[in-house]
Length: 452
Image (cartoon, rainbow, N blue to C red):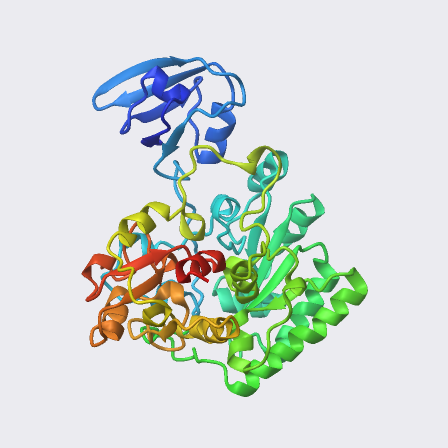
């Protein structure tokens, strides 16, 4: 049952007497299985809520117009059970996590509902006819699908699941029914790169030309991986992948009128070349997947808008009650709390921006180009090791190690490093050796923080 974790002041729920901690047994006689169905039910008016409050069951009558928000946030997006992943991909980053982290980090989901709500990628290996009917009927769009390879044998081998050979039929069915779908290919050296990547992009053009976007991202290898076959790209493989994507962009543009496929920013950083211009990414549909993130940040830093981060239309433009998660989680409360510990003095030269190694490669030239003298400190990721260098996977331990011997000053920390006020290793900003200011992870917020 959904449990109430927050109530909006002055909302119909507060007026009717709904309390934090109440469990919602039913809404107008129906028990919702997820927050999507919950939204459909609470959109009606008036409502009868059957609640469980401790050991007491009670009914509340709520008067509100149809379409008005109820004003309740619940603890989970899925009330029945998250559909977990039954693939065994050797490149899955969950298998590369060390022991002892938060239990939620080890949950492998392959749930189309979380794909719709939060942009999680699904392989569709557990998708069914009933799921397709619901997605099409309720227009649950956009969805995000991990393709990896269009060759059935290669895909089944990568997923270590025989259903991987056939589950892309659901991708075709979704597209045929007008569902917006974004895809990704995680490139594993020696497995689905080179000629296989060529074959995959050809297969996308032949079978899934209605795909809205396709991101090609490199394999992340943690030092905790137990898979002997996993390895980083060589410089030659990086260049070949970028060249392959750019060649197919020209093909897609000629045939479809749009480039469709994009390489992750990480590829361009590894290749040491310039990234495509901002206009090449359109609405930055896969920004959260590292596709065009650097250009979007640069645009924000310079005062321009970089497109919507959450693209959704129709009835589900906003999902009342849905708990925020992942990149879409609002972090402003964490930001305000941590910022009170910051120091304001010293001028620009005393400001240090904390970031990952990839982030530093983007920020250094950007700040130089605008004459801002803040220092950019690239923090090595010793916690995960391997080729993990993105800012969002930094831990408090590594940040603390990087600044412990440095003088006191003004340290800026992007909030993407935190979830509910904690780093991945469970530590908090308050445990760092110097006070830090946590700021939103976007270009305009950094510009404001630097006074530029």
